[in-house]
Image (cartoon, rainbow, N blue to C red; front, side, top):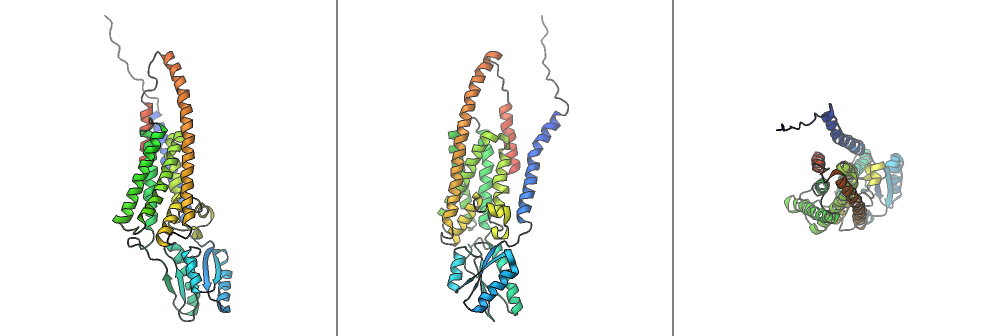
Length: 371
């Protein structure tokens, strides 16, 4: 009678668990580095870069003042002369300028539109406070816009962007990992449903709950869904190629570069350079500036261009998803042939083990770290 054999697992190679841990720590450390570079690079030293202001009046003194302010400021300001108050107000409502100064010996006034950007309006105030200080008179500031009841600082829309972004990119790793066995079409439909849920959560909290959005709720919700669908679509497409590195890349695209260039803290006239350039076509800026134009500038002031930005990002997501679907089909075809050959060679044994589920768990863990 033979003695049963007990199979003992071979001990793990020395140092393997530590190496495994070190490899997984690369992602949060890269996130730390990226966030430090992006946020400090974008926000550490705000200063005017071609800040557009105007001096109002047809008298020679007004034109001379405009020239003096421009000469003293250099590239920090773009100073123009406007004929009257009506032209100045129209320029502010069209978001073409951040301030218009009406000189007066005893009652000088500065027109601003704080809903365009409170920080830019403050920069314009600082410029013309120096002018009136030399005259020895106070500067009166008139805001042409009325903030929402729940958003007196004008920052609420930026925090809505943050919520939409986290809900969107945080869902991508879950769809990619937990839904890896699903076909691309099903994952895309799930992504559309998730983006719808994210946009509804966003508009409900920003609207009825906190009153950041007190009118045009349907329009802001639609912008939010467009934005979220673009982010989720790009994430699902990228996951096919990048797998567990998708979360890091999504953070770069939709946090590090997105929040810093959105105009939520500083618009391009206080940033300039790299982040100011991104503002003209990045998706977060498309949502934020589109929502501002809709809420505070009657759907004008470049709203169509911001809407087009969101649509183009969604189109890019669709193209990426099509490419990912074709890549997966080719991969399944190759794997099918290899699987048949492997099954014949191994006598039908399962060669895969639990690696797939472990990889999925690791991706979701890294997604949790990112969020």
